[in-house]
Image (cartoon, rainbow, N blue to C red):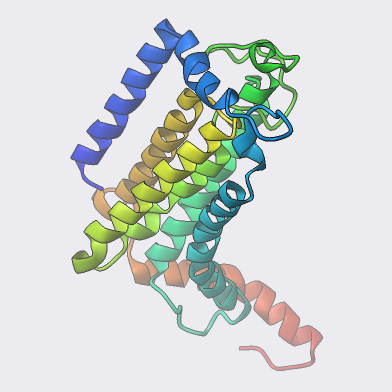
Length: 256
C-alpha cells in the first residue's frame, strides 16, 4: 500500500473515465462480443447460463467471505467476552472490517448500485432489453435498483487486496498477485455474462482499491491517525463491558 499503488489506481480511474466518457459506445462494442455468444436455445449472452462460469463466479465470491471470517469471529468473541485477549491484532480487525463495510458495502452496494441508474448490458435496448443505454457518468438511466454501475462482485474481489496487505512480507507479493488475479477473473466473468459493462468493472476495482489504500494509510501509516493494537483492543473492551456486566447481572452473577 505505497504511493505507487495509489498513483496506478488513480491513473486507471482517470484513463477509464476519459476513454469511456468520450467514447461511450466502446462499452457497447465490448459487450456485443459476448451478446453474440449463443447456445442451443439461441439465448444471447449465453455465458450467463453456463454452469461452469457460474460455479467460477460463486467460488470467487466465497474467497472474500472466507477471508473476513477470522476478523469477524475475533471481534465477536471480544464483544461477548471483553476480558479475553483478541485472537488477532486489533488494527487488523478494524482494517479488514472497515474496508469491507466502506468499500463493497457502503460505497458500492449501498450508494452507487442503488442510486446510479445505469441498466445492465442484458437490459438495454441494444441487446434486446427495454432500458436505455447510458454512459458511465450519467446516473439518469432509469434502473430502479441493483444497477450496473459499479460491479459488486468485482468490488468484493478487489477487497481481497486488504488481507493481502497484511500477509507476511515473504508471502505478500504472492497474496497481491492472487487478489489481482481474482479481481481480473471476476471482472471478465461479469462482462462475459452481460451483467456489467467494462467501465463498471474497472471502476469497481479502482474505487475499492482506493478505499483500502485510504483506510490502510489512516490506520497504519499516517502519524496523526495511525492506531495501536493495544489501543484498539482497549477501546473494544470499553465498548463491550457495559453489555457484558448487564448480562452477568441478569444471570445473577457478580460483576467487578
